[in-house]
Length: 298
Length: 283
Image (cartoon, rainbow over all chains, first blue to last red; front, side, top):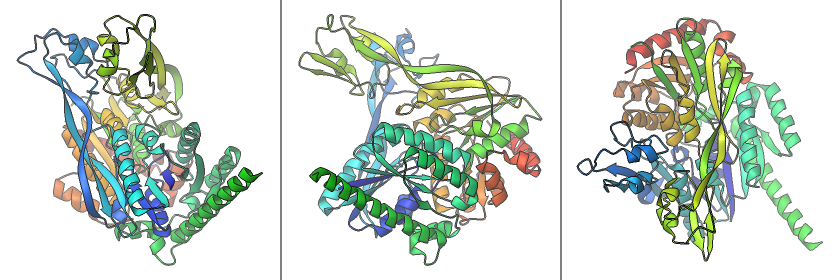
């Protein structure tokens, strides 16, 4: 099975809209939303939840005030400044490492598991979906991403899917790195702004660091044609193939309001451009596979 | 309230956090002392707009354990104690998985024979300086590193007590966003009037409320999408302090790194007024 991951570095460039377009156009696939902080893909898929479960994130240190002697060892050893002056433990700063548990001479601190969110699988008009949501104020999204991808793998093996389409999160840190494991192709979605270029350079660094093949899509390209050209020059220098330019098109928001992908809207310029991007992507993969086969023979 | 800390956050990425944070800081600086901290250490962008002069750079590290194989008795106490599965024993060999290590130091605390020493490993940097007379700082996570929060906490050490602090928060609702929001007097949530914007705004509001930070909203690209965000804010009693229309002139200025208040000076007063309204909401 081929795993295709949509990333961008910068947020709001159109990852989810493009992922939904690919979901509409790809045969025999499963879907995963790994942007667990701000999961939106399901809003375009009309899902019916099939299975769901609690997600246990990291532990949290809890102090028994009755046992505590007030010695302050916990505060000395905590490297995350989670223990305050009154030796109260701030759950939002606590990393769940347990250094304080080890240090406490009165056995007054224990690590307690916390439920940090829920994962789910769903049936949708565009194929099976695995996703998750963090509870408000909960953390460790990287581990939840790993769980979503495990659910996705289960869905794929029972459906016999050829392709998995994975919507990633913005940034370059923990959830992004967690979503990269096992991926074959990364589709990078950027926009023609200095921020878009700056953030693209960083996410390209991450994708190269993990040695994954990448493709570039320039969204909202007509909002700044000069910067779109500059992005293409950058891509050229980097050896990063450009799958196409998508124009700014209000039909993308209108389709979103209707809970659909813009490729389902007849005659929309962005929808047409996304179809062309998809076709180029499919052709590039086929070419690469043929080259690999022929290279293997000689 | 003498000075306040405003975390400009969003849930959804790309809604215009940096635009709001930069223009708010620049507009306010004419009226009162202010500083700007870009806490999106994974993808920092504020510097592209304010073009700061960086005066100092410091390295932010985590401490990784290194095991003295001579001293180590292979008792396995460190393996047992590590909550992050960063240590393992394979036969007589001790393994440390640097990428999984959070640098908490618990392994060193439990080792009965003092066989663990620690070496620093750089996660990223904090750069400080000034931009147009405003103290400025941002952080930068190194490529391939996963842990952004220690850099955000280090950045927050740059907060000056006698100034308004505008924090440009990372997107999402996970640890980096929480690190930026924690301790703010008000969360200014930037959203767009679409189902994606509304869905992620709802999550961001819940996070801010869990952290006991009052919220206010800026609607960016107003005019696209639907009424969902307005209806939600009315129902929840959340003030919408500013609406910024979708406008190709604003998008063009943004594209090349020109602050809105420079490109379209009418916006200067609106951002100043936004500051005044924030003072009413802050706690």
